[in-house]
Amino acid sequence: MSSPPWSFSQQELEEQYRERAYFSQEMKVSKYELYREDIKDLTDLTVSKMDVYMVINVLQLLFCVMLFTEGMPKPRTTPLWLHWILAASSGSAVLYFVLSIWLGMHASIAAHSFGVRLLTQFVPSSCGQGGCFSKL
Image (cartoon, rainbow, N blue to C red; front, side, top):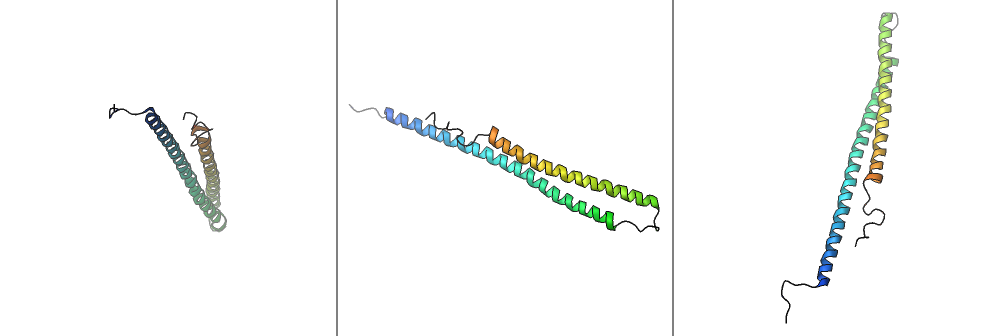
């Protein structure tokens, strides 16, 4: 007697379960690869933005130092209070740009280290400690 067309063997069923498990594992691996790529993109965006800010702030600091050294008005032609105001504003601008460079450098380092922390502690690697194939 022949078997009905809707029946199948236990071996075919096990093969389908195995294929489903492999496909599920591949999807999990690709999902975590996308998570890792997104984290890398976001941290690289922040780091590159802070690097651009630091370059601009260094240029502004150089312009401020040039103004402070070469752009001072000639003595005896302008009043003394104007010298003090120019020196105070140039000095505060130098302090502002130094602080801005320092904070930009700190933000760049913090973003990079936070990205590394996210990648190593919170988003598992593709397999993670050999647990990928334990259920197969």
